[in-house]
Length: 381
Image 1 (cartoon, rainbow, N blue to C red):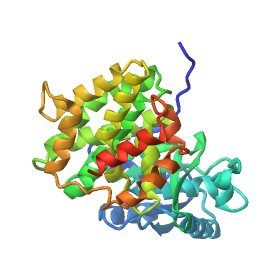
Image 2: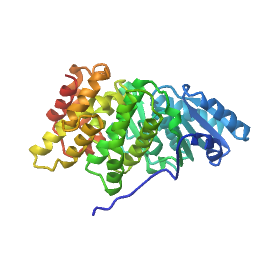
Image 3: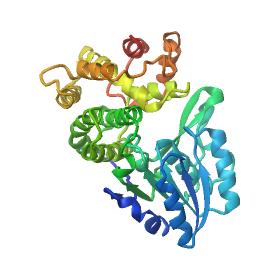
Image 4: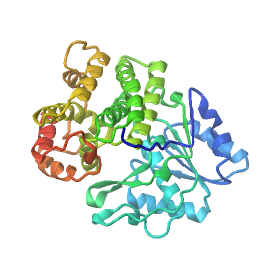
């Protein structure tokens, strides 16, 4: 057996209403806290009042959309001026990524860009990060369990990751109730992000026994839960998706991803929503990977596993699960690649850029540019 390592949050709390322990547990991380938050969850106002009542010194930074390098620079300046000794992020994956980047960059000298490996330069090594707690309010990215923060560099049309095993949160508090009644478009995009992360972690060339166990146990239930949520609100299905999101983050942090995320990193740099991009590409990436593995005499059993879970979970037993996913998305009026920032005229340049993406290197089989272009053409049809 090949050796492997496992990283995870130092402590995780999961369950309905566990958010009410956030002030107690996050308050143990320091006395000068930066709270990074979105604006859409009213409960965060109550949390802020509770933190302040506990005697903490608190600075609030509002996140807006996916964080850019310039936004991180500004937030770091604010956090340093405040003298932050810990970070708490409450929000979706973008908010958690901003908090995670702050935790890593506040103690580190130089410019944040120095730690991203831009222009082929080696990334500088971070100083030990500040203690960091994450409370997700969406079920998709699993950022509360990962070692990277995704940052946009819009002037270059890029999304890049700040990576370090020490960026895994000190504390993750996952309360599925925070996702109740989320809009359907967000539920679908975030849910498909989690499903894609589980599928690619299972298929990738760095999978290990721990990530295999996580993905096999979680992916079938996640597919069923997401379909159930398209039929109406369901707390049990929200619980399942919150668990799937967290475990997908844990899986990808300890294995890798694949061509869907390689393409999403490029298309996302053009402004598209990450989860929706993953959902749009997943079926066609599975199909092209299956054909590529057959052509190269490779065992495609794992892709058959994923296709089977898709068929069962989407209520298409006995059918091809890849086709079932395409049909499912068509019924949901899911956005096209053009809607997501990748019109057909951009396919060649997107495919070229995706070949160099870090996620692509973990794909189960090395794909040619023509095969990657085929994914885009099929997904954009």
